[in-house]
Length: 235
Image (cartoon, rainbow, N blue to C red; front, top):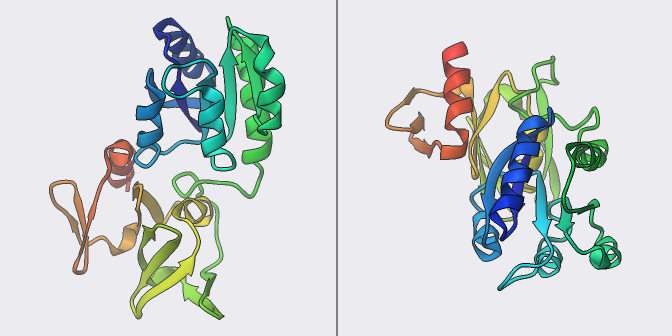
């Protein structure tokens, strides 16, 4: 399921895209903004897989926005003016949708993103349930560290690094929490915050939307609460 961020200063255009996101079987709405500056600020807080971006907006144009986030998120440009298509493709834009956007055309654009992002090796930790290797190998400093999955308590995202807390102590690796979320087995791990993934078997207790594992208290982010409590109640 692709989590979509919609950015358009026209309320009717936002409403149409929201309807398309809801109607499409492979998309879910992460957030919608009329102000591109606020949307840019929210990228640190909202988990996003795909951005629908209007070209002509005040304060920050869609092209400027796309240049800033280039390489970090797939972007689909939306506009009433076809003259921007060439510049969009030069920015490695996934697709270019001309308003008014039909559901069929919307779904074709989403399919392009899925072809690149939802191959057999890309499965989120919350969805992956098949048997997985009992160990993880990560590069830490000048060595490749072997870590038993059963020994991992939690993972914390620290800018460009991830701290993997094990029973023997922490292991730092130059990676992102998003990559670990794609590869860790979902029967054991779940992302609960933009900066945290926890191992379900090592949770001692939960108190006031805080997960306690040993001496560590881990917040449950608002975006992740529904999925987390569902997993806990289904356990």
